[in-house]
Image (cartoon, rainbow, N blue to C red):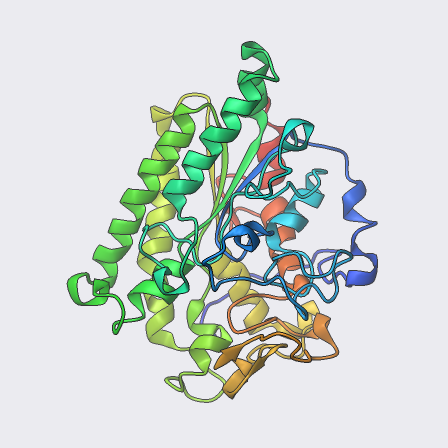
Length: 370
């Protein structure tokens, strides 16, 4: 399916059924004061619900079919990657920034700023209308910080921010909803894949610097997964049956390698008191696709909810019946993993080896006291 030599190691509790997930990991001891989530639809938990002119919404059934609150704006059948990672850290899923009730004590465990269709570049995903790109998510964090300053003393706020964990999931839309859409965007005509990756990383680094200057110190930065393997890309018919679109996957290399180097550079002493962690999403997801049965998956190339080839030509539409055995599918819709796949990715981020996380994993990141 995807040509990558994923490492082989066993771990417990990676396949978590929706009916009992909330009660197990959610009882973990709190390991950080707060979790700040920035990113795109992989971790959006409802921000786009409040964007009137956005077409990128998941506030309808069957999204959330296995979530106790039903459709909330999560692009999944239940919990997202950041939800489950927060469970491992003992931190409840933070509220979406755009929620008008998001104030007071509700922000003390963190806030979710992620927005479906949002990218590192402001223009990525513009065909979906309103969305919140990385630059605006940083501005929104500054708004939250202004609220926190009225609630926490300066010394305590410094420590609070330093020991909080920032999860940033960016880049997919800059490819899927920009670079790989030559009819709508000119980027692929002006930039080679290597030059485009450098453009993204330079913008990314600028915003990371801004967040560091605001007092945040612990960053988890997952790389891009094998986007050439998602049902949306398989549905284009550019790959032989049973294989991914290799040309798309090859584009991920310059970005992921550059992000890993960026993490190393940021950790070399130029950002005192901070720790940046790179998450090898490509390797972890590749291991799932190469060895689906090891993780309990039966279907790795077709969406659980969608229409057309690989159920990926038209993504999950309102009231469209999804598949029944959702924990056996890697992909929920044309673009996003199921909760079961998110559970694998979250555990490997939390407690994985240096192959999964560099230079340390999220559990070790939380254990650092600043």
